[in-house]
Image (cartoon, rainbow, N blue to C red; front, side):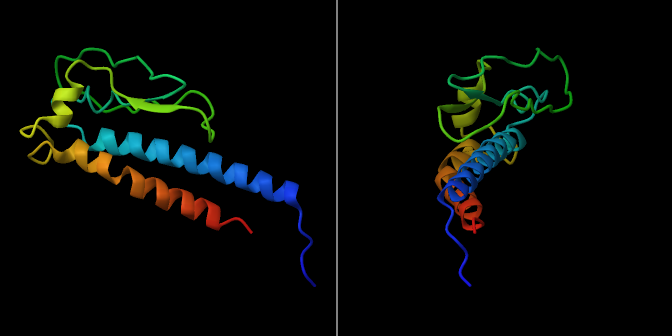
Length: 134
């Protein structure tokens, strides 16, 4: 016997899948940026923040020597919709991201590589989340 169609339940499942996919995409991207940032003291790697509606303007404390990388989790609930930002508010972030002589692995392509893979990442994450809806 065929299962009865329940539109309200399907919409709830879609909303939940979109929320989960948005959360995964943002936290994965934050983690990728942190993990690929050039290391000196670890401050840049710890500076990538998620913000909703506007960039999170906080920055980690100044460090004199190498310290642990601490990724700041978003303090609220991540949901689909609205404007989301992943930002670093250190004065040298832009230079570090685009300078071809910077980078943990020799070369400044770390940021551009992440930036160029965003559309593939979001497509993969959302396709997976939505394909699980039955």
